[in-house]
Length: 301
Image (cartoon, rainbow, N blue to C red; front, side, top):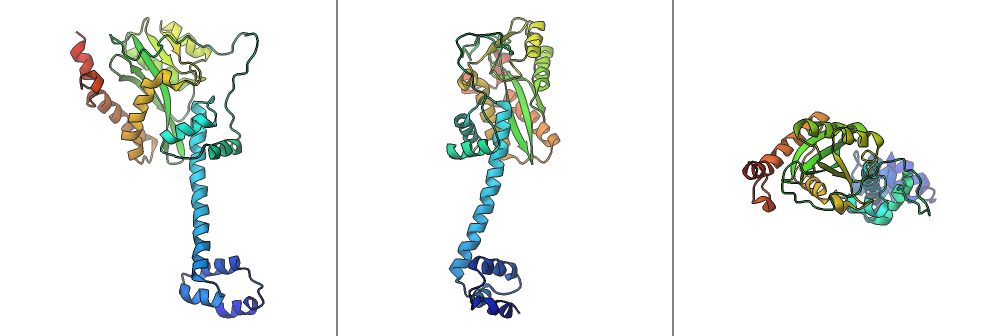
């Protein structure tokens, strides 16, 4: 039947090779490939080359969709990142991709970084920025003197979740954390509230980058109400908050990249267990090979 259907057209060259390849692909479950390619008058190599190109294009599409979802998540946290920094962050996530492709994808997603325009005078700013009080002094002599905070994202199936943490720079202990499906001001404020309930933060420094949450008026008012001194990294300079970036790097390499979370509940439980492990069991070379909690308990009377 297949032979009769093709014989009428193949002889006259009316069916392009692409169509013949598609017919073979449709019928290969019922008939041997050898017979089909013989009837269709195509080569085995030609058929497999066509099939591999289809699979490759399909895989490329899937990879691009994955990368684009990560780009959107990065932009939600760092709206001021241009394509070079987005490329760097993707590579940190294990997605090695050319910066030109990142540029193209950001263009397709209509994502543009927030660019500071040069001007000869400065008016009143809509956001609240603080001086860099921390100034990369990541080693502190006492607890509760200086804290650092930041947000990262985690993908669970087709959805992103955002983890906000606060770290005590005395012993690198994660003293407060919150996770949410929304990267908003509430996530940040709830994390700081938790810190205020656990520690004496009167006069403490709380350092962050200049994300929109950390420069909002409500955030500034909340810090002032609790007598916390705000501190900001220079714009676009991730090294000014390298301490928390280091924690997130360990967190992702030791948990996220090795896990396959199926639900928000699984993710929350895993975060809780990892932070407990990080604080109480994971030794640190610069802290006399003690865990953060052990270091605090053995050095502070």
